[in-house]
Amino acid sequence: MNSQEFITQHVKVLKPLSKKLALAYWKASISGSDEDFKEYEELAKELKKIFNNKEEFEKTKTLFSQEQDPITKRQLKILHNEYLSSQGDLDLINQIIEKETKVEQKFNKFRANLEGKELTDNDIKEILKSETDSQKLQAAWEASKKQGELVEKDMLEIIKLRNNLAKSLGFKNYYEFSLQVSEQKPEEIISTFQELADLTNKPFAKLKDEINTALSEKYNISKEDLKPWHHQDLFFQEGPEIYKIDINDIYANHNVVKIAEEFYKGIGIPVTDVLEKSDLYEKPGKSQHAFCIAIDREGDVRILQNVKNNEKWMETTLHELGHAIYSKLVCTPKLPYLLRDQAHIFTTEAIALLFGRKSKDLSFIKKYCQKEDPSLAEKLPKALRLRQLVFSRWTQVMVNFERQFYENPDQDLNKLWWSLVTKHQLIPFSRDKPDWASKMHFVAAPVYYHNYMLGELLASQIHHHITKNILNQDSLKNVDYSGKKEIGLYLQKHIFEQGMKCKWDEMIKKATGEELTPEYYVEEFVEGA
Image 1 (cartoon, rainbow, N blue to C red):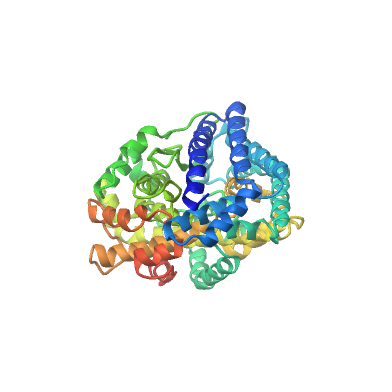
Image 2 (cartoon, one colour; image 1 turned 90 degrees about the vertical axis):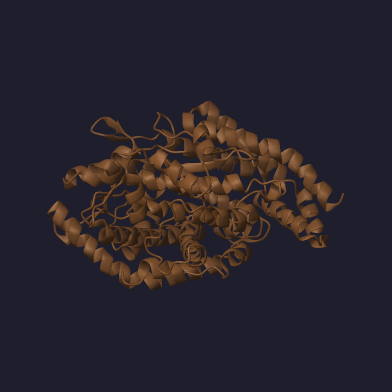
């Protein structure tokens, strides 16, 4: 059997099963039902079983070493990575899938209980933003963190089972295993995040003092008495509103979904077909998070959200639709089935983040919300810079914590979590509770979070290229994308339609003219902060 026959045989099996799996996950995420999650679990096991075949894995390696055609060779490399990710004891793999599904379902169904009343994540976030009574803030924050206690034991078991699987395949731990499968290297991630930490240490410390001053005034307490629940977010990952502009109020009387739809239409990439298939508003049992899912590789792309008309959901809608346009436009007949996917998971994050930033952009607000407040010109860039610096420090917590808990899952994880929060977010606090376990990403998207920050770096790099080379403008600040169809054409031709034809680093160099660099992110958000 030659390479092309081998690939054709695999696609024939994978194509219908992958679609069934995606539809099952979509259905389970909306319903939260045991039956739907069980269906998803069984299909996930079936897919793993296909790629668990050691003989086929060895055949892939042999064909890859012999193949000369670059497109065929790339498809074999993708199959190789899929096989590698599914090697090991099948019973152990199935056990991991069962436990992951169980925990995801717990997250889906969880609603914080505050004084006998069930509250959604949106409700908790609203309390944290609007309430000024410290005791009530603490109660709401702790009510949400209870989900960590519900899943802690299961998550620890999953971490150890993943490590066992990785070690059986010759890796030090699951962290290193996951990075290799996704064509990344631990030393590169560690180096990049250390560089970012060094670049942001002083600017963030200055900003955090400004935040502390504003929060101490708001809550009428000393800076020393500020606690995690005073930071207007469950994890201090976005940053509080300290510049006396109610960005949420700007969007309160507008339909954020319609705004996003109009924006994408303006850059020449309509998303109406995506929205028509999507599930956008709150329902009992439904996942409270947001995601984009490609049902097949033929254009059926959907987003799941829990929309409210505020800035957070304006950003999220733009973000998820950024994923969606990538997933939709990569589905071109010019690409073989196996290459109809993003070059890397962080390259689609870059597109999503690039457009999500528009929710705090003056020209965007002026056009779609008809807001003419002169003070916004000064305050909005500050708000966006605050959001970026705060998020960059939050990712330091997530990335360093995840790497260290796979290195030693038996250590005191509660202590580790709060030591990293203190170090990177400058919130001196600790308690002996599994607050780390209340972050769903550890189970649903393991060894993933670093890609958000890499996506931010790439988003700035793409933004720089668009600004300088497509729009022929000098400043990276407040660049108006609205109605600029040349932006959509550039993204479609140089990023989306390239799919997985080449490795992510090659694609970035071809699309932007240089290798991935933090230079433009620093220029946009760090310098002068």
